Length: 451
Image 1 (cartoon, rainbow, N blue to C red):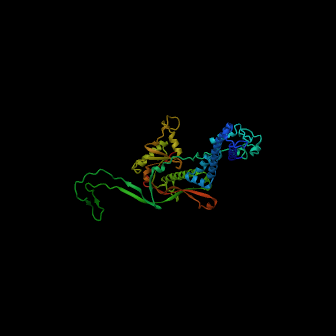
Image 2 (cartoon, rainbow, N blue to C red):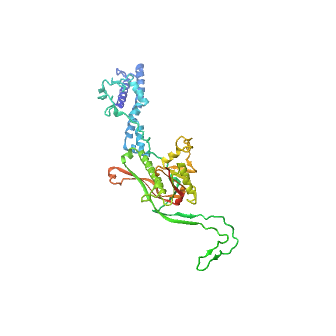
Image 3 (cartoon, one colour):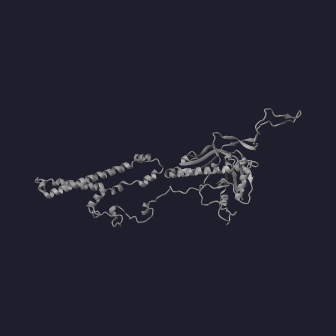
């Protein structure tokens, strides 16, 4: 029997009784005031009727709320108010059933305590707590007590707290190679830029002119003639450039995913988005350093004609310093002072474990402070760790003499037109970058062997 029916029957019984109390049992038309006992009973019933009326109205409101909250229109409106992709899971976790709300309602608890203070309904039906075994389960239409943990028994009611927001991303080392070079933009498919080939620095102190006469020319026809320097003439430098053309190339990565996965696990979209973007950025850094230039590869620094080289010299510290010297020396390099060195993780480890005594064994303390969190530097150069760098190699250089052109920065797109994905409810997530890279001055870089 439903709660609503029990309340209604109790209300009807008391109303009928009060109607009877309005007249004497003998039907002699005596007033209720003639009997103090009947008057007291009438007042008590009237108070009880008012309480039952409020409880009936409360139950009715619960029923109306329950019917309203389960309509498709209400559910759609609730989801529309919550734009986050986790709303369905949150709604499931926080929604309380009307039955649970009714059980916790103070009025319902008070009524239940009144009609069944000893666990018995007025008609004698026992109210059994789920904490105790059911001796006569037929009274509650339960055939078997749920005592097992299987999926067809008690285990069907077990809940699982899925902490899907806590995931371990793939290894993501710090990426700083791209930050070393100039980052520019382009809207074309081809990049044409001048690359320095040679330069003679003739800068010198020059005295003021003492005469306005033209420079003296000597020599017999047909020459050669000798032209004397004009008074106060400034020295002329020598430059040689070549025109280089670089084609914009794509770097891309895609992954298929089901539409259901995106619907039921909204956070997976941000996970994949972040990871795809990271993969693209990591590959860009690798191509900047070691791309071979064969389309669609970018031509990286190590494969650019004209860069300097430095053989291994005793240890990594000495080798890097000699590479810096070659770049900074105008007789061998561009004269630029190198601002960074890019090393492999293995070479960086060797450097980190290098000791003041001159080895990686036990000769004194570490050269690099292992407890510092500042950017590591050596010989005035920022040290950058690049997993994609060629093994046993490092590049020392003035990295502002290289440019990365972005035509389209890394972007993630979603398609359902891939193959027959639309018919199979599959989506294709594609991350893509378009750009080009060029070295403006090859002699600003030195390729060093680290072992």
